[in-house]
Length: 414
Ligand SMILES: *Cc1c(COP(=O)(O)O)cnc(C)c1O
Image 1 (cartoon, rainbow, N blue to C red):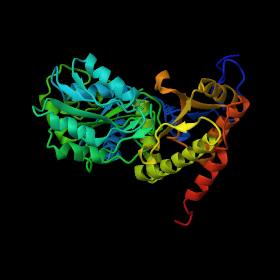
Image 2 (cartoon, rainbow, N blue to C red):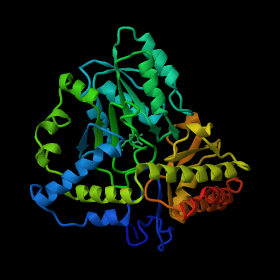
Image 3 (tube, rainbow, N blue to C red):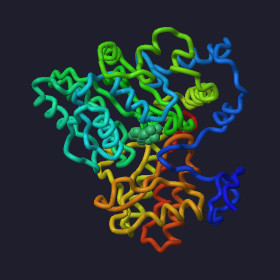
Image 4 (tube, protein in one colour):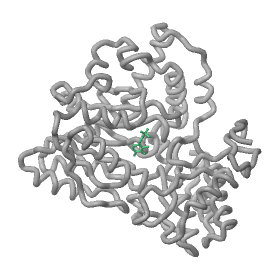
């Protein structure tokens, strides 16, 4: 029978999946939601002008700027990340303006295709699906732009389709080195809560993020975190816009205005709960350190599988890998059956390959959000079991992950 849910989570239509225990979510979004945060959604409705709700919103607004490493203003959208992407463009550009969006992976491509559909001119880089965007290439393109046509440099921080992380501080330096006035607009959808983010120190003008990845919430909320140069630009930008416009949201503090309509009440209860969870975890930098350990363990497992099989991490240079996700190449071997078997037979959900057939095949392991070591080992163990059952060649991955976690385990005394 289909769609029974319970403590064990979703049941597969095929009925193969174990009815006991947990369903392991290791997609690069949506991610696991802490129980306390799920419970926050069960609170009954409240009038949005009730002082209790208004003060809850105030408390969230007071904390949001530091979540992004020093924003001057934050716009909260009741939308998925695509809405925040669009918002980042229409508020900073005049019709027909040129933007630089590197060809870094599928998310960069989607952002670029959105910009084209909106009538902007997209300037891009060489395709680079196995490394992050090179700040030197950006500097060269900006240096050649002597008429300063490029208004925004749009950078995907963590490319969820490749597993690369871009050096944002170096990107800022590249822009400054050529004295180019373009805004630095960053997609941090897959890096918020996972990678360090320093809007102030790295001179990020607009940062786009969402709820359903490192922030451990369901999809449905997104953010445009802004610094003064972006706010200034938005006052003169002439692209027509209405619901996505930033300025009206700052005109008065009424909660209805801040959301451009009815506030998402239960999402705010949940966001409040998540901010408390993050504080208890020691803040976003402590979360980044945990994610680095988890990522290293996954990399060790994949390297182990690859000693006797086709498995290979898409991003070869360890310094260029994000802590959020690992994209695993399987070369000639079709990884689709592995993704299906892991999910339907062993309760482990991972992401499928996004880069297309000409880039070979593979799958993507998300290791972000509400996790711990045994959950991670469980997911890797489920994948390794599925490889074994399917007769897919592989070396031992699990012992390498255990060794990596043991070697990096924090001392309980510190
Ligand atoms: C998930 C993701 C998006 C899209 O977010 P949605 O909420 O699905 O619209 C954009 N960029 C990156 C890097 C992502 O990982």
